[in-house]
Structure formats: structure tokens, C-alpha cells
Length: 216
Image (cartoon, rainbow, N blue to C red; front, side, top):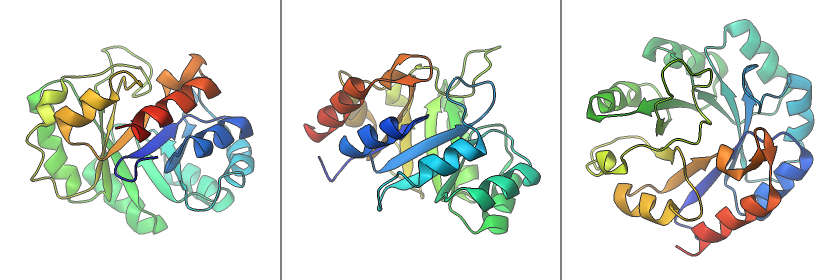
């Protein structure tokens, strides 16, 4: 696949999901620890999945406003390489988690309009990477994985950003080329568009997305 664009495939729940993502060229795989999500896995399930991930692929734990007790248990039992904070965590909390566990932290930032971009500068000071996602719908239960996109033109002037970042939200094999062209993204993240039903990954869709990125 293309060496220029790295893919993160998130919400994996089975060994077959992991194998399909690896075969499709994913550089990151994500495990979701959020009970309201159809992609939620337990710590025990994630521990078993983590050992299935080939060397060189980054294992990411997606958490939402997790406390220290949960993170202590998770990171003691699962071989995680990066923590993705996908809730309303403050910059201070991001810095605390990064210092406490010695792991790189990715902070998700929801975007709906230009006003939301101000958070990027703030979190760039404390996070190792940023995930720029579509802001969830009002009243929705899930902070991400909603299959929604935003106006990618908002990210056209991102040259001043100081940290690596990923583009997320509604990406498919059909639109990833346009998304990369408009934003300059070098990393992309997706979850729900890889599924046949909520929480059930489709190996054919995983392969199709990997091929679409390889063809860019």
C-alpha cells in the first residue's frame, strides 16, 4: 500500500478483524473501551486481541473520560501502545495521563465549524497526536464512530499545526481521495464505514478501503 498515508482501523472486536486490518495495510488498530458503543470490548477481550496484532502495528486504546482506576487496570493487562482520549478531557487531564503512564496520547477533537479549530492549538501543547473528527450530533450517545463527516475545507490551512494528526469522520473508499486532497491529511481513521452492521466489521469493506488508499 501507499507509504504516504497511514490508516487507523478502529473498533476491532475479533481476531478476524485484526487479521483483516493487518492484511489491508493498517498502521494502527483501535480497541474501544466505552460501554455505550456497539464496538466496546472488555479488558479481557482486548488482552487476547492485542497478542494477535502483528509487530509494527500500533495498538490504540480508545477511552472516553476514563478515570485512573480504569486506566491502571487496562494498561496493566493489555499491551497498548497509545491512548486515544475521545471524551471531554481537558488539556490538563491529557497531560496527566501522558505523564502517569508514559505512553503517547492522541486527543480527539470534534469539528463542525471554524470555531472548533481553536482547540487544536490548545491540545497540541499536551497531546502527541490529534484526531480531527466530525462533532457528534446533539444528544447522541457516541462521541465518535457515527459515520458523519464535516466540511473538509475547514482544514485547508493546517500547515501551522505542530503535531501529527489524523482525519476521521465518514471516510469511505469513494471519498478518501477527495478528503486527502482537500485536507492534506497523511493519516486517516475509520470505524463504522468498515461494518456490515453496528460493531460487526466486514472484511471485504476493510480490504476495499486499504486498496483505495494504496491506489492514491
